[in-house]
Amino acid sequence: MHNKKEDIEEWKNRLVGKVILSDTETTTQSEDKYVREKDLPAQKRIVDPDSFMTMDFQPNRLNIKVTNARKVIDVYYG
Image (cartoon, rainbow, N blue to C red; front, side):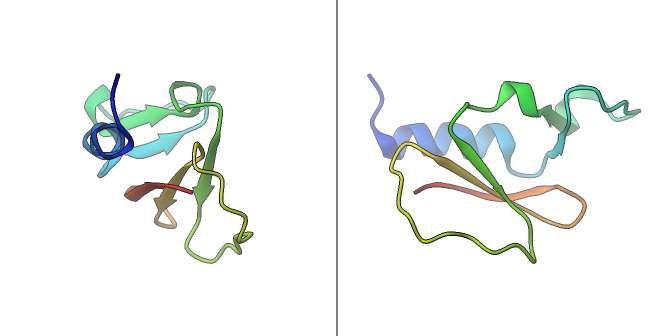
């Protein structure tokens, strides 16, 4: 079984630099440039640049920090 550090590195490798698209959104981008919301874990929080976040810590929640264009720039648990 993976530990949190290994797990977060896998998520970073999988997501950073890609754009998050809704499940029904169409795109002309190649599949290596985006990820669908349905492919993310159920316990997640997508953090937009100007959004407010609650300070509750949930160790199993994947936080996905994105740009205004929804391009992933960081991933962490909490």
